[in-house]
Image 1 (cartoon, rainbow, N blue to C red):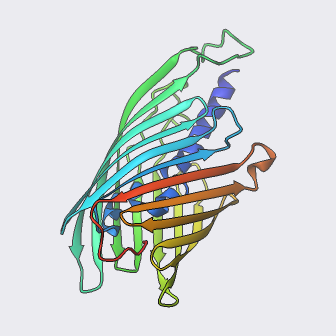
Image 2 (cartoon, rainbow, N blue to C red):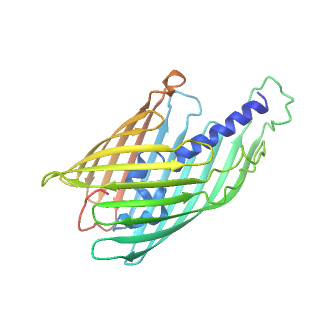
Image 3 (cartoon, rainbow, N blue to C red):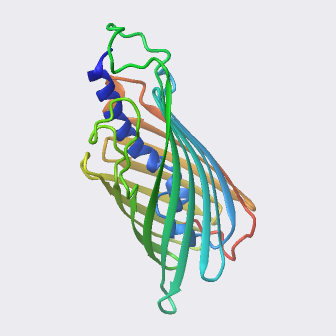
Length: 297
C-alpha cells in the first residue's frame, strides 16, 4: 500500500459519498434528506428509520443507516437527522438540523425555502492495513478523526399532487482534514440537485407516481435517477427505478396507520464484474399526526 492507494481510496470516498447524500431509494420516502425545504411535502410529524446495505459479501462493505424526524405547522417546519455512512475504512457520522419556511402562492401552489446545518465526524481507520511498504510516510497506522461543519439549502414549489425542487448540498466544500490533505482529493464535494414528482390518477384506487432526480458535482457527470411507483388504495406501493450508473431497482411499501414500511432491492450491471453489486434497503416510519390524506408524495 502507498500514497497512490490512499489517493484512490479518497477519490472513491468522494464518489461513494455522493451516493450517501441521497441513499438510493430512501430519499423518495423523505425528500428532506436531500432538500431541507421538502419538509413541507409531508403535512405531519413523523420519524423514519432506515438502513441501506450494499455489496454484503465484500469486507467493509458500504452502508448507510439513519434516523430522520420532521414536523410542520402553518408556516415553519423543522427536521433532525442522524446519518452514519461507511465505505471501506472511512466513516462519516453526521447530525443535520433543518428549518423551512412556507408561503402560499395561490389557491393551488405553495413555495417553501429551507436551510440545513450539519456537523460531520469523519474517521479513517488504518490499524488493519498490511502495506508492501511499511515505512510509507503517508500511513499513520492509527485511527484518525475530524469534525467538519457544513450546510445545505433548497427551495421547492409544490401542490397536492406534484413538486419540483432545487437544492445545493455541502455548500462550504470543507477539507476532510485526514491523511493525504490534498485540496482536491480530500475535499467534500458540493452537489446540486434538481428533483420532482407527479402523481397521476388512473382510477379510483390506482395512482402512478413518476419521479426524476438530477445531481451534479465537479467530479462526476450528471447523475440521473428515474423511478415510477404504482399506488393502490393509498396504502400499497410497488415501484421500479433506474439510475444512470446502470443500477436497476425494485421497491415495495405499505402504509398501515400510523406505521409505514418499505423495502428496496437493486442490482448494478456495471459493477457485477468487480464485486457482488446488489443492495438491500429497509425503511420503517411512524406518523405522530396522521394527515387528512395518506397519499404518498
